[in-house]
Image (tube, protein in one colour):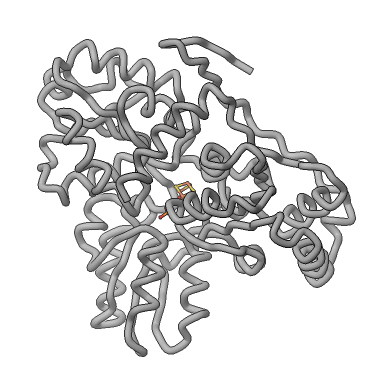
Length: 377
Ligand code: 13P
Ligand code: SF4
């Protein structure tokens, strides 16, 4: 493990996650057998176990979740279920890390497949952020508040906690940015440039007052005066799933189904969010569909497992994915029921497999950053 010490805090670069191969009988088991084993294990473990399922999980996994939600809601659920010794997080790595940061000492957080990461979260690492910060604080005289999207590694959350910033999710980015501008003059927002830009625009900050920091370019890629003049400094990161949605798809959906309501996730590019009728976190998308009248029509710009589930749950409404070519999140999809069964079976045998443990020095500051967010709700 690479270790380097900066500003008194030990930083670790995350090693490539390794997932133990499942024994053959887990792989070969029928769907019914796997389901039966999971149901039995859940029953035996009772309240000691809580299973959290992000909205992008496949149906065969989501059916086992005690709670479903967006990343904000799941972070809260994990923190609220103090009676559970084991939190099995059916989602991706950064979500399980956040659950561990917020968990009580006796709680152990488990990610059924260790390779379930997030390509956007991987677009900013601590060394790049430290380098960016050192450069920006040298050339910009005003106070910069660092804000990290929930989709980031724990050590980035620790970084913002230590430097007076906070975490945000897609459901509270506006609230957190409003708070940040009360603390300082500028915001450094990572890793998703689109969530940062879409939020800033809705706060009335013009596009010209936002500049991108490219971690792969010399000194961020823009001239120093642009960083000095901007109000929001956006990290050059994005989600490839949401990057697939286009304004042409919105035009097509409206032409095919007049009156259809277009709702997208704020990780989509600005033009798509501007052209849509509404936008929001996965939980907000779910709520909008649930609250709509029978016969309502929605073209949704987010991950396909959620869109398909909504279509299935609302047969009296027309619910389609904006992208006619299926766009799954391949890392969310790595949580297969066989892995859920495997971690539960191991719990029954007294073994905790795939535990997500955030080191104490990182946890301390990451918790500060998460608590700041939670206190703003
Ligand atoms: P939500 O917090 O809206 O669920 O978003 C998480 C995510 O990863 C979207 O791509
Ligand atoms: Fe990450 Fe995009 Fe998958 Fe969300 S949909 S977990 S941002 S890769």
